[in-house]
Image 1 (cartoon, one colour):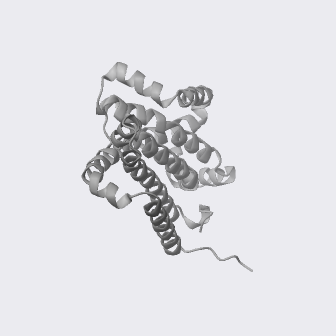
Image 2 (tube, one colour; image 1 turned 180 degrees about the vertical axis):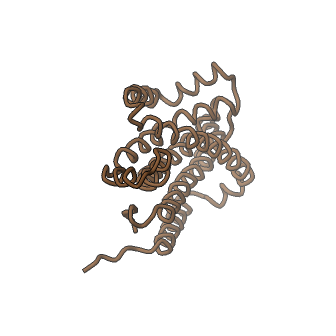
Image 3 (cartoon, one colour; image 1 turned 90 degrees about the horizontal axis):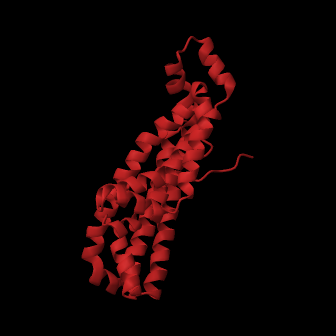
Length: 244
């Protein structure tokens, strides 16, 4: 008997029901109503800054990471692929605070170094999954395309990328969730975002102020992750989407 799979609408309802339950529990544990009254205006303003930083750096990471992954997955670039991935892996092992410090030393303080550092932190999962997805395409599909007379350009866009799209979007999903969760560190170099409430709350020993920044950050990361998963569900063709 075929197992029943939950519909996306049902999954969405369950997700929001669970989110409301968590918020209700937090409301009982902490004075969230008072927190919103005290910091509501700051939260709205800083969430806009937070999303702007995440959107800009995440968009740049997608725009550069996917083409770079495609390039490193080609046979003609095989000799550079391992070196390129090792370079990105080394970059990923450097603490984010160190990357922020390096960006600040090169670009000063403010939005530009913050976007650069967030872009660097976000890049690796996208490149890695793009390479893995393209290399995981079944060879007989590529051979069939060549037998039909497809050019390498047509093979890439009509055979390889559609079949690798699920894996690529999984990397994008991971990268954007990491990005949103890392944006608060941008406050340390004048980039803005919800880190202003988090780190100020830590400095002043004000748990309520810290939570006023930490809870929206966590919520945004969950929402971004869930949104990309829904996009992947509907965008990836049924034949290569294990969720459908």
